[in-house]
Structures are given as structure tokens and as C-alpha cells.
Length: 311
Image (cartoon, rainbow, N blue to C red; front, side, top):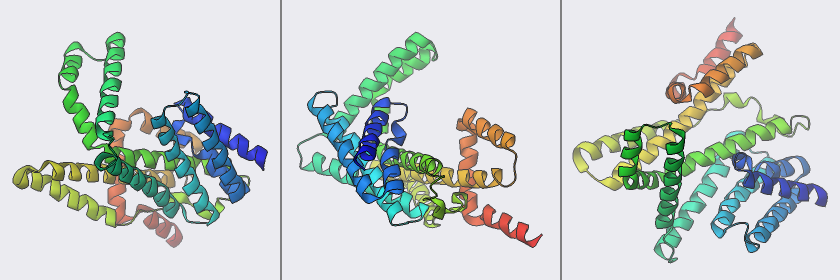
């Protein structure tokens, strides 16, 4: 048990530091919980936290990075606890997305209002530095024209300000990506053990219809602000809500596509479709969002099953 936990903790640290595989950092903790049980899972968490603290004390990790690593640890624990309790995939994902999201929001609010730490200013400085570094790289790579670079530099403060105001939606979508990838690869890696077979056909999952009402309310708020109220907080409340809704519809649209592709389709066709989606994501993404939204009313998968049963 100790050996397995130490390996899981070490893999977690390696994924977190890798950069490219950062999004699946909770995977080894989730795997330890799912395959070996709670004791091994929590011991893995202890090893991961120990490695992080040692790295912070030694100066390899900053304290902000340590807090960020704590987000991934929390996600792994929530997913692990959920799988040991045999929660369904939708409830499991909701728990692992919402709890860290609300915890971070509460932490930022507490630090900003009573903790004496200006988190928003620090985040703004980080984004400004990152964008300046990105512009320096673009200058060398010549991927953007001189007028485009000049426009971005001129409006850099406005861009950073907008990014900060839509940060809640961005962080929510970040959580969706982390949880989705962790669950996807977790199911692949545990296929031989069968511990996640109780998920059934994940492509049949459907989000609650209440998401549609969130979209309607946020859309109405956006137009009310633009033409009647002229309130910046209301505008960015609406924008954040619409971005979150779009992300959810995108996932549901992916469920519909996955269901259709795995219904007797050839592997070559599946690879071709996935390749087209990845290559033209900016264009196809809007179509997938529209597909997910329309599925809330039409429920394409249920209709497909009904037709196949009636034949």
C-alpha cells in the first residue's frame, strides 16, 4: 500500500510540474482511490502534499503554485470519494467541479475583503506579464502582423481587465476540462479492473434542463444591460453565465457526437471526425454548442434508441 501511494504521489507531482499534462494531475489520486480503496487513496494524497511542501520549502515551488496544486489535490480527493461511494458520473463531475470552484471563490473573496491580500491586482500583474511575454514571442515568430501587435499593446490594460472580469467563467471551464479529462483517462486506465463499469454509457448523460433557464436569464440580462440599465456588474454577470452555459452545451454536444460515432461506426470514420473537430475547433465548436443546446429539447440519443428498438 505504501509503495502504491508513494508512486501515485510522485506521479501527481510529475504531472503538475510537466506543464503539458497539468490538466490530468488528479488522475493518479483518482486511480488510487478507484482501484485500491480509500486508505491507499488518502495515503497517496498525503505523499502528494508532502512532496509539495518539501518543494515549497526548498524554493522549487512558490506558495501560489502550492495553492494551485492544492486545487488539483482537492479535485482528486472529491473524485476518489465519489467513486468509492458509487456516485454516477454526472453527480461525481458536479461535485468535483463545484466544490473547488466555490472554495476558490470564497478564498479570493476572503483574501480580497479581509485578508489584506489584493488577489485581483496580483492576478492582473501576472496576466500582464504573461501577455507581454507572449507578444515578445509573437514578434519573433511573425505570426501576427505589426498593426495587430500594436493594437494589442495599445489595449493591453483593457484586455487584462476583461480577462479578470470573466475569470469566474474561465476558472469554471478550467475545472470542467480537468474533471472531464481525469474521468476519461481514469476510465480507460481502470478498464481491466472494471471498477467504473457502473458508469454505463457515459455518452447517454444529459445535463439538467435548468441550464437552459440560466442561458435565458443571462441573455435577457445582457440585452437589458446594453439597452436599459447600463450596469457593468450586470453585464459581466451575464457574460460569465453565458460562457459557462456554452461550455456545458459543448460537453453535451460532444456526448451526442460520441454516441453517434460509437453506434456501429468504423474506427476510421471516428478518427476522421475527431481529427476534423480538433483541426477546426474554432468553427466546429459553435456547431457543437448548438447541437448540445438543441439536444436539451430534442434528446437525439433517446430518439435514436427508440427508433432502433421499433425497427
